[in-house]
Amino acid sequence: MRSIKRRTLLKVAVGGYAVAMAVGAGLLVPWYALAAWPKEAFNAKAVGDALNNLYQSDALVDSGNIKIKTQQTSTNGAVVPVTIETSLPNAESISVIVEKNTRPLAGQFVLTDAVKPKVSTRIKVAKSSRVMAVIKADGKLHTAAQEVEVTVGDDLDQALAQGMDTLRRLIVDLPGSSVTVSAKLKGDVAVIKALFRHPMATGNRKDKNTGELIPEHVITEVVCEHNGKIVMTANWGAGISENPFLSFDLVGARKGDSVKVSWVDNKGETGSGEGQIK
Image 1 (tube, one colour):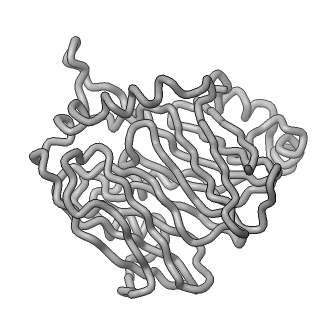
Image 2 (spheres, rainbow, N blue to C red):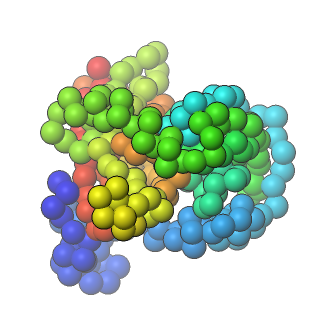
């Protein structure tokens, strides 16, 4: 529910023990027990600074074991689908970086053994740029990249204005939850898809009526659970598209199992959605 506020919840529990007890009792959503959102990494203006703040290193190793599936040419830089997958062993996290965005780091996905090292989402690409995948595995940062040419000028505001109406029409017909979750078993893997209702405002656009900047309003943290156990978390920034999409592959699942996806944003608003594996 969006009405729950971070500051209100934090008053319930003080100290690590109290937080743990509150999570166990269902008083706090799981992300309050996790590491803080890496603000400096998402506000960094350069790729190296983002990596240093996120991983305490910017040493990258090129890898042929990372696949990036995205549009080579996009007519709408506001919504660029991207799928990143790796065959690297012991992958711990997947980060998505748009090299020429003002703030390059779009998102980080922290993995567990319960998910395959593969994620899909939609990102903003302000101008023609390399889209980079950075995989942390065995203590090293592995990378691959693909060029994306944006043909609707270099103006992301124009792309947003032209490209979001269709997506909004799709979103308006969704059920009332702030996250719609679908989960379908394919062999021994459940494909989880989540569609969020959220503006993901960058803080750079102006209100057409007042001329004032629209304040930044972005989902910062996402928690994915399988039968009440956390299987993946994500840190997001303004580089994730409006009304975000997330897909990942869950292993060890069965029909009838529950999947829950929850989020919190930079204003302390929260939301969640649940589904059953079919």
